[in-house]
Figure 1 (cartoon, one colour):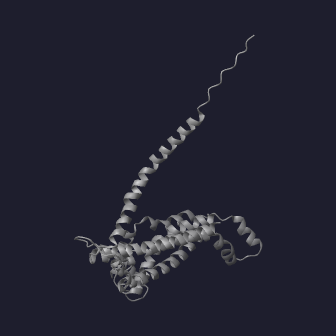
Figure 2 (cartoon, one colour):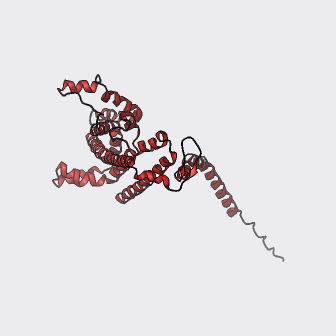
Length: 304
């Protein structure tokens, strides 16, 4: 009686199939990311490399370029550039504080759902939908003409004519007011998101313990809102350090209101020296990278 030895079963091609699926997924991922990688290369990496190369070359707006080492970086010690740095820092600090206080006050005002709160949120946010250049032109008409509604209002209140843009302090204050009107609703929305993420039970526990509204604000709201405040500070500082449109339209950089970006514009298009403008741009970019890295680390630490 003969016994048959069963034939060995064919091994399933599962590993090969899994490898094929993995390769297809990698190809699909490459296909998805390639367009964005091309856009980043064309609009960021290549221009950044060109800017670095221009910063070590004598590069006139019209003419032939020639290497000159780090000579262009002498622009960083130019008195006009140093005045622009000081004004930019001053404007950044004032704007960040004023804008943060106003936006935080608006966020507290519309934090709870009450009749009319939705309308108030919409009204506060609407100026953010207006472009910055359009806002600057609008306020230029309000600040710079005797027949404007703003000067009529000042006269009605019994004050004399105010030269809103005729001095450095007046131009700074007027611009900070315009920026606050334009961006307060935007930052209000960011802070409102942080406020609504706080557990109401914490407020209730603080009230039961006898805490006043001021103590709740300082001991509960602000500590829990630190990551959101840090994010708003990152956005505000970056935008203020790169300020251009508002001062270019309102003052043209007069009365010592030139910012760092206006100084870059002057070097590039008025002095027609793209090499010096690129050197200032590289230095500005380095400062922004350091500040943003420090602020993002602060956000991560506060978020833990």
